[in-house]
Length: 288
Image 1 (cartoon, rainbow, N blue to C red):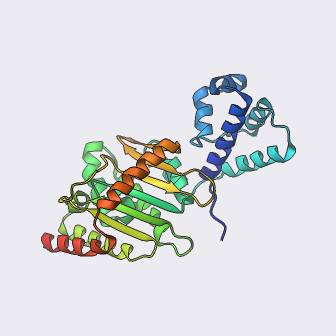
Image 2 (image 1 turned 135 degrees about the vertical axis):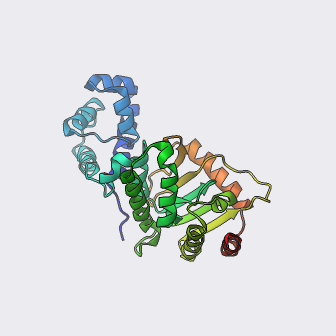
Image 3 (image 1 turned 120 degrees about the horizontal axis):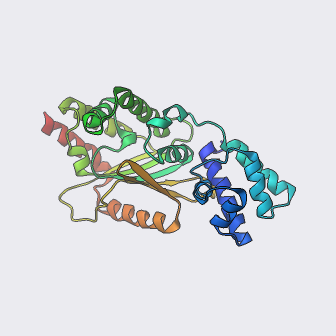
């Protein structure tokens, strides 16, 4: 079955090609943007696939500026542009998402491999509805969010779980969680026991691997949670890192390699996947 290619993926493909054409022409991003009356910030966001290019005339102007004359090559970029303007299924939730999360969500849908570390709470794709809601409700008075915000984000998180539970081409997921992430009380003992059962059930899927990094192990530990996404073809992998009120999304080779080293170091120190269920069952007995 052909791999999915959503609008966000197409925006990144288009941006990647435009960046290569600009650099081949020897133009800076400021020079190219000024020629077409753009801000250089807008063009930079187009090149990294964060923003779309709404008007086809803008794309044609860039192709003219970059000297792209071959009819087939121009049509390829025009087709990418058309496909990049489609709406993603999560579009109704966009204004509830933190900065850059829509870009990450679109790329997440197209990825086929994810490696992630979560130091503080249960990893999002493994969360139950009750755990997720309790997490958002605990932050509601502090962040001054609304009930609509809470329920919308819980719904979105539950829909995202389809990435690993769908029958066609499920995402290959490898998660490392610090022991603190599964020990931290969220929602009460009943919520935690239900959450442990959910992790155990999901870890039985052939495409899901869950490891715990125990407190007692002397090991490198990353300070923030991150996810590395891989794609089925030649699109570069990306790394996403959570930051206060926003997220960072990068396809810079050095960034991806740095976080891959961090993940591999923790993977070597974490308990074996076969030990995850026994550890969580032990924690469930402690809550009792």
